[in-house]
Length: 245
Image 1: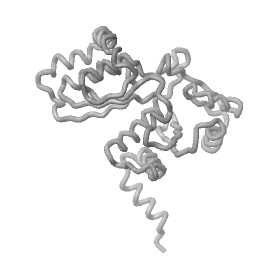
Image 2: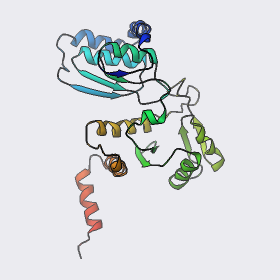
Image 3: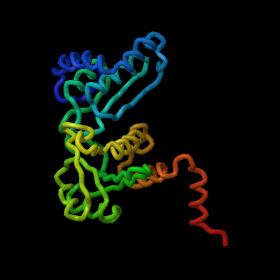
Image 4: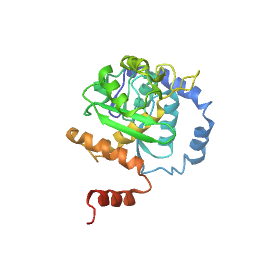
């Protein structure tokens, strides 16, 4: 097996059995395995994924590998990992780093603390470096950047309990049970996806110095806001900073 870090590798057999069951509910991926397994159109591709490490994700990883890709994986959420799924994937030789209940320190190894806000409808993101994730710190940032009365979706991190009293419509999702709340549709997928993009850039070596994290986050937010119009946006910024007299 390749390098991995999972909760309990002995859970792999259980995970393998559930993967077999999950294939019946994922006919699209199974069809891709059958149709393209021999031609391997992804041969030579190296894919690093950051997504909930569940049984369903294991079927996705299985498909990518059968189509020829080299795959490495980590979970995008400290609560959602199914440990038997991670163990099964590890036995396939896939470098996988995921276990349920990761501490914040384990999850953001080599990262300083970060806090992000995703605005639904605009796709705009604010990601900033913070000294901690205490209620005082989080509320200060929220009150600075989010208008009172705004609907806020978050996970059930206890320090978010300060949000409703500050005049916000606060909804939470329990990630240990659901990715999307089955009653009101609350989810945090937008900001999780945004963090995944930022971390992917770091794993590719585009930023490695923790001291540069703040500037990296600023750049990432700017690129996201101006995607599709990068050059013109740069020129506009230059004109604003250095006006021609």
